[in-house]
Amino acid sequence: MIARSLDEALTPITDGCVLAVPREVSGVAMAATRALIRRGIRRLHLIALPTSSLQADLLIGAGCVETIETSAVSLGEFGPAPRFTAAVTSGLIRVKDATCPALHAAFQAAEKGVPFMPLRGLIGSDVLTHRKDWKVVDNPFGNDDPIVLLPAIKPDVALFHAPLADREGNVWIGRDRELATMAHAAAKTVVTVEKLYDGNLFDDPALAAGALGGFYVHAIAVAPKGAWPLGLADHYGADAAHLADYARMAASSEGFAAYLDRHVHAQRAA
Amino acid sequence: MPSAPRDSTPSFRDEELLADVIAGLIGNARHAAIGASSPIPAAAALLARARGHGQPQVSLLGSRRQSFFTDGGRELFDCAGQGRIDVFFLSGGQIDGEGNINLVGIGDYAQPTVRFPGSFGSSYLYYVVPKVILFRLEHSRRTLVAKVDFVSAPGTSPDNVHRPGGPIAPITNRCLFAFERQRRRFALASVHPGHSVAEVVDNTGFAFDRPPDVPVTPAPSPETLRLLRTVVAAQLTEVYPRFVAEIFGAPEPA
Image: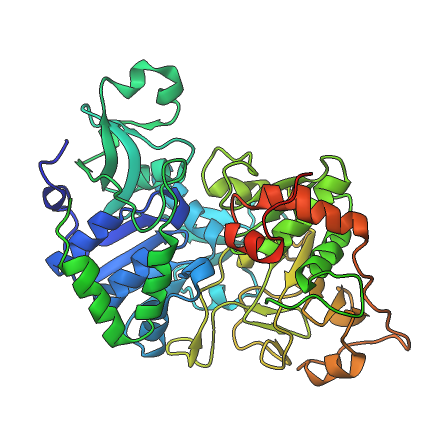
């Protein structure tokens, strides 16, 4: 359960796999992301639940992504995600545009083991027009009430960063419950954590309420500050100076290459 | 959009004027939710709450303190789907005269000339939240267009589509519009101090209604400015420290 190294924990994430990752505030496994780039992973089908920021931009810029399914990719207050933007305008990646609750609902369908989930909204939008895999049906319990059906999303691997795990493989995620949904939906889940918890998380009812059972977790690696330069809520904030540097450097492909050299390739995983 | 204090009026910033106008639009709603990267709408909602002695409930995405959600990112959308969120804010790389918004891109979808971040929750929230306030600081023919290149969410829907929500009022750095859902058209509601109707017409890519006399957006009162710079600034700094430092300076004691 507890891997000997970060690279060992990441072995289920292979070229061409469908990889689910969380939004910026929920615990993004950035140390793991850098390790995947160093390994030279290719052709990922990346699914952001429901948005992404630096993580998707780095993977796209490094040429690791073939398709991204997301509601948005943005660096937030640091501006547009430059490598995402460049890749889309150059036609280098395929985007499956979604809307946040559609991704949440499609993961929930997978965790329930049902083929689809209905969702309001969407009708009359070009988001729906471009999603041939989504269908509009008439509500079978209503009368002339069109509603969209979304097929379940079943990722090969879910990858996220959390504060704690115990040696039984249970992971403490706190109130970021979409991490549990991701893990329930995915065939395998890989987690990096700040540190190991001495004891069993399920022995303390307060901790158990925020825990994800190790049954769902394939591998855990300890990666202190594993979300850096993003923040980990309630633990540490984002590294604003670094993110501003990134936004500046990644504005050009040369600058992005220099960023990778300096912060990804030159730095071995902790 | 930073700006210097105006010299002809008691000193306030554009951001404070906008927050005051938006707080008025929020009114006595039960629950206002604010998405990511929205410091002015967030300030407005906290201002409305300070004036309303705790009403509305304010949920700030990205905040641990100004949020009661414990069921992950989906709870906001589930809450909205049930009608438990009365006010939300959306923006758009493009907004057109029928209230359609585009957060995806310009040109061909597969290989656009300009790509925006993406639709976020708009393709859902625009339909289910009764009062959606469109907040777009940049008021230009580039942003306010005759027709959007991509519809992230339409301004209105056919009668048989479940649509309790939609836009009520776009607000920009120059003016406030009102949206008339039945007519699928905007009307100019007020022009901000220091701006003119002619300037609004020149910089707007869509046609809109305007009354013979367009009012000037009222300046924030001293009490409003006091609330913004004390209570609101102190609450906002958790999520938007850079904005608070730039606009309000260090929060003053309440």
